[in-house]
Image 1 (spheres, one colour):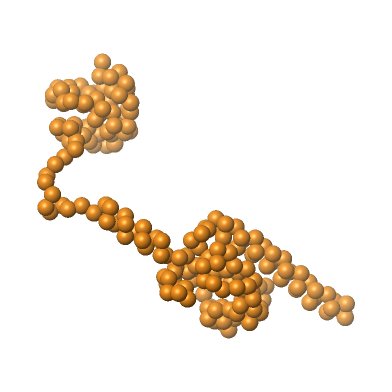
Image 2: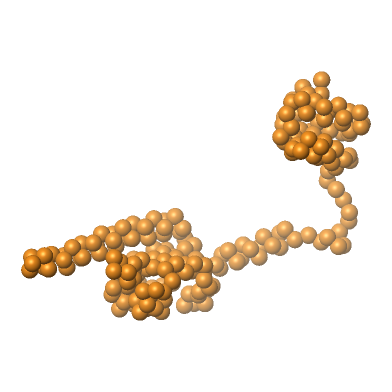
Length: 217
């Protein structure tokens, strides 16, 4: 009996070491994959005063051996605390906005023993979002009315769409016989006289121009 009791703590320590070794690998892999925009931090919640055991892509300026955050302390106090909290608003010490996700890791007894946290620096992405928004903006009210499509292109596409709809399918799903029937209709409607009509038809059907020529024979 005494031998069994003395073995238990050793087994528990070995299991804990194995768990943290695996979590260290996960943290390293995430850090390397998400660099340089995402900080990945591994917390040991069994030692809240020195909770941080690993930090990758250090964006917060924290160091290994620093204490647990408020979220870590909340998990230590309450085993029923949410295990995954994703995409919540956060900020670094210098005021940079961040988006964070925290994943709690429980031990065999159901209490929290670790936490894996991801903190994304939103500064660059917000700048990109602003630049892209400016780049894609258009003046729809004051600009001239102009189309870059060849004259008649819309009519050809509309005719193809109507033809496919009558067969309860899509233009790109038309088989060879259907395409041949379509091209006869387009020829009768005068659509083949439109400049670059073969290119327009091929693009809308998702086939090559050579296929259009072959089907039109």
